[in-house]
Image (tube, rainbow, N blue to C red; front, side, top):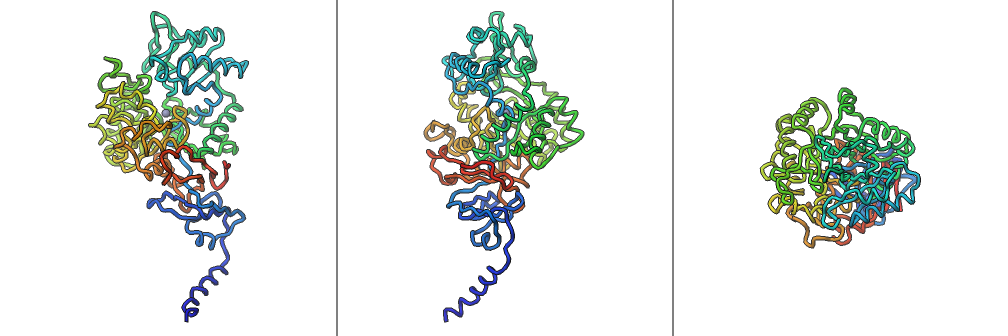
Length: 545
Ligand SMILES: [Zn+2]
């Protein structure tokens, strides 16, 4: 009797297995595939063809329907969409890999020592550049002056960027070549002068005085820098990065390296807010290829909290009477918004302080006029007055946040802001509630490139040392699912790329990663041990252990 009941099933199986299978370029099975579709579905297999996701489903579905010369048993491991960083300085990061690494220096003496070591191992450089110092890590936490640097390098110009890129210190030779004079003033910047002499510290717009005379990399150096940068990104599972501020010549260089196959990283670009870029791109509209999308315009409302350049509504607690400053006039931001409102470009404005955020939120609201799909963004949205949160949701403004900024700044942000303002700072969950979604990024090279540090900071609100136990302002922690969406589909949406990347669904680019442990269940203490076992972009493996 039993066999009769099984007959239709057996017949079905026979027919199914006789049906010719469709060709695929790659099949992955026995995996835990987080598709990050709208239901956050988990499947076990995925088929890829022509660089795109062909189908996802159970092992039986996918292996029954498709065949491929390349079949991969994932051994039960987690597969996620390729990670997307919603705020980076990808080009500057590549460059920084070829300059003196000053990150984590605990004194200015250590900075100078590291620069000397770099100079000794890279002889013959006309200019010595470095990046990553942070006076908040030095004893006394005050800005250094350049006397030690002048002694060590009397005749070679030296320029060292602060960790956040919002200040630098230059030696006397570099200042002389740039023609910087004591007491010089500049809108949106500070040329630090003490007792009638330059200290070498240049803040925000004043940095340009020296930057405009530093040598530009050659085309070959460019390619080498981007290569090094993208390889590190692929090793961390990043397949798309959001580049926050490039000029036309850099965009064209990137485009040509992508077209030549040298750069395989997908890049969304925000153009730097300057007349040359706007004059060229605005009449032409956004520029798009398979790997490049130039659709944003990046403006800076203020500086950073670390260098007290963030523009606050009431004075810094640790610098009485000082409010920070806007980098341009309100009229400038208003006219930029007025111009872009009639185009397909996204306006993306850096705003850290509560005053800067209010100015930009009000201007955005004025032109966006209620709910819309223009996807204008505020980068960082770091300190928000409690009265202003609603201005995000009212005009569908995207708060683009970097969870590791919170866990880096928490050591001293309270000294700058005081307890009341600190509650409205790094408020990721409160900002998520505004539109129901939020993109996450790192701002690398300001922070480390690791998306796992972003996940740890977003979900557990601790830094790499696990500090503070119990987490920093946990009311603003995201769930694991929210953090993963923030690093995939929501980041894609903030870049207007959600129909192409950010989830593993049929028709989308086959950008995905295999991890050695699963972010949806890994213990807090193990998050940073997560290793990427393989990274694929458009169905091609670009990294593997
Ligand atoms: Zn940035």
